[in-house]
Amino acid sequence: MKRHVVIVAAAAAAVAGLGLLLRQWRRRSEQRLTQGQRILREFARRCATPTEKLWNIANELASDLEAELSSGERGGNLRMPVCYLAPLPTGEEKGTYYGINLRGTNFLIVRAKLEGKNEAVTDVKRQEIAIPTDILSSADSTRELCDLIALELAKFVSLNNETDSDIGARERMLGFTVSFPVEQAPATSAIDSKWKRLSVDDTVGKEFSTEMNQALRKHSVDMRVFAVVNDTIGHLAGGRYYSKECVAAVSLGMGTDVAYIESLQNIPNQLKESSESAETQAINMQWGNFSSSHLPLTEYDSSLDAESIDPGHRIFEKLISGMYLGELVRRILLKMADETALFGDSVPPKLATPYLLRSPDMAAMHQDTSENYEVVEEKLNKIFEISNSTPMVREIVTDICDIVAERGARLVGAGIVGIVKKMGRIASRKSVITIDGGLYEHYRIYRNYIHSTIWEMLGSDLSDNVIIEHSHGGSGAGSIFLAASQTANGNS
Image (cartoon, rainbow, N blue to C red; front, side, top):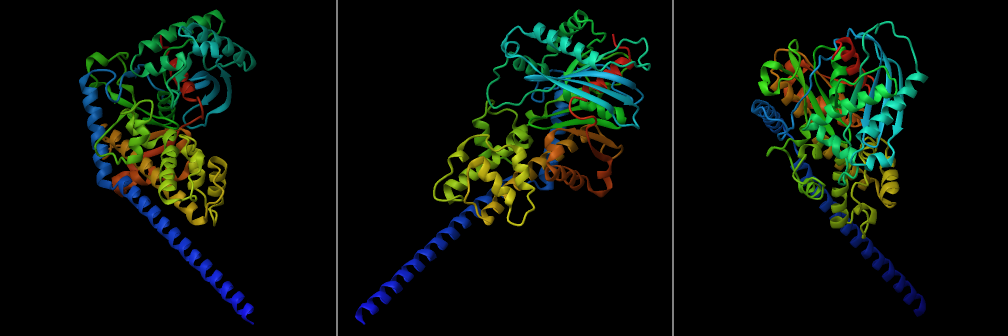
């Protein structure tokens, strides 16, 4: 009997001890969750973008645009060279055209048919060609690269040959655009280094055009390059083809860039380089360089900037572009894992790896609509090898994604309003803004935040004056629209 009593007492003590441990674990978990929510609330507070702040940012961007343009100097903070001197498309150009899009380690050859502003781009054919490493690494590789492009273009034309009666006897232009690579390591490619200078030194493009035309003649390609420009200018040309009210193009992908239409009367004489008949010029504005005391920066933004390859530069880009959104989410998760044991008592090792979380994966988690956030669970396991997340933790992850994405998209919206304001078109004229890039195209919530921000800032009376459209024709198509306008205008 005594033995039975002892066993019962021991069992009761064990149950009581287990209950105590369970209560302690629950209390510790609740404390950690509370601490995690505190970090989340503080982060959300610092990322807040009320309408007043957005207008401050828009007004400052407009003022910076005006000041930099008025100074008459190239390559200031926003790096605003007058960089496209020929007329943009009118929508009347018809025919089959060719273009090249140079993209860091490869280039894209594009062929497409234009049938007027009321018809979609048709018969699109593309071919991507890798650039050999010996050309990439050579400090004097321009001639070799041009020779490669001309040779591959000759092959491409022969495989996709057509007769185009619309072109007639006019000389055919080859549209040529450059997409700048966005990297988190110093440029190791001589070509990358050269093309990054295109934004502030238009002699780079002029020299390349000369070399390219020599290579085209060498390989008997009956086309000529008139100008080598940033691909955002190409997107602007595409928007202009379909609407004369298209006044700006925004690139939103891994990096970000803007091109807009400026009246000649607002451009200092030393920057006027267009033909006498032109009334406007296209200006490439690298708004990623924009910085303002009104930008909602956090400790995570400061550490990301300090550890980047260009500390103190491209602050706006680091808040809004695809290269950095996922990295910001990772940094917040790392702090939570370290300070609140969000993923258990030890920090998952891979969570400490910079730039491991890509923006497409962030978007997939953010847009997870399953009941227990199964997509978030899958991504955390696949990317960071986190296999013990709870539905509550996964909800916190989506909340972080939402804060980062909303802030970035609202800043884009403010930037667009600032550009339209600088042009004096908000109250009086409709303005079409064409946006290109995977971030805008594939990240639905981010895209919706941009649209709602513009409506919020302008109100129901004026928001209809700013129309956002996705770019036309797909990857590399900007070069096609440039080729069309250059051929139609017989540039020499």
